[in-house]
Length: 467
Image 1 (cartoon, one colour):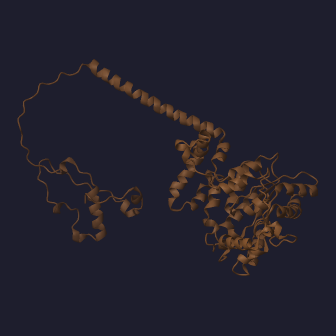
Image 2 (cartoon, helix red, strand yellow):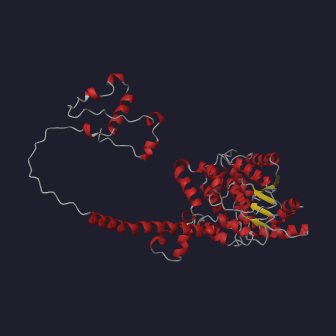
Image 3 (tube, helix red, strand yellow):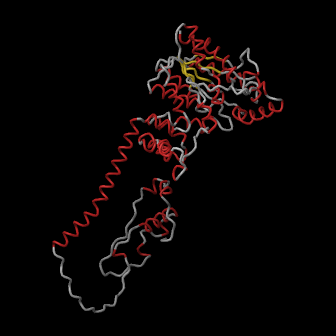
């Protein structure tokens, strides 16, 4: 039994409660000088009186019991007479005292160094905490906080906040919406595009929560309704997509830990500990931004280990191209109208591979509808009016669905959802007056298409909501 492999700490944590509650048995000590008892008579139970499980437990308890001195085997030992050495004279008290003083002197620098290190760490964390948002933004490789900060840096609090996925990032020219809506209302309107690539209803909930907690409460929330959020039958449902979860983490706070823990799976304890430590300890949570500030362009030592942005270089470059109100225009001169027949076929194949997998086997379900309900409830609790909008889509987009009844089912669901939750619903999925030049692909508008969409948003959504 001494060679039996013992479980590691993680295996021990999986021991069932009955096994874990059994206290180890210690062998009864024998009287000094008594002969060792035979092994068979020392067994606490006879084999025929135990089932297999009880026998295993008894063996494990014996294997883990500590041995006392009396348990060790004894045998006669030959005694050899040895001449006694003269006793060493005891050191004088002054010598012992000097040795103790010298030992204390050696230990003193270590204690001082330890205390100094702790004080330095505390001071660094205090300094970082004083400008925590700036360091959080610098450490956020997904740009979630940067998108929020851009809106919060406008000359005044936004009247209107646009949330959603890349359809919002590329499709909502918030500044143009302000101009057109302002003309209708006869006053200044300020809105902001805080959309994020791949965002879900869950991430949009945390984005709005971040704005509210920062004190930037809009009058109107325009939430884009991406159908992918509803499809529990997708190859990778929105609930299982990692991108919106990681984009939501910088926006969330400690009060959201329990809700976010559902995404951590089997490594929940490790991820949860990392999340909590990052929020409580600035030096840990903002270590990437701090390292970037120290290293600059250097690639020496640990500077070479700085991870690339989690959002990816392309997404970051697009975010950097946003205007002051958050819009990223697709004005590269590429549209469906500019594609050759071969390029159209390639684009259609790419669309089917990516977006087609997201709308396949369309089955409404999952957790995202619940987050949409939470988003609406949070907004309404702070006096924010909620407008739910399906953005313009190219006619070829609807070829992705396997059943002709899928899209009508989606629109009907959103209509009923909005009515039940006190929101206003708009379906602009089949717009009029658009050409192929207005779409970069089947679901993203070019800058020209965004201008047409801005006219719809200003006249049909924003201005009526602000009256």
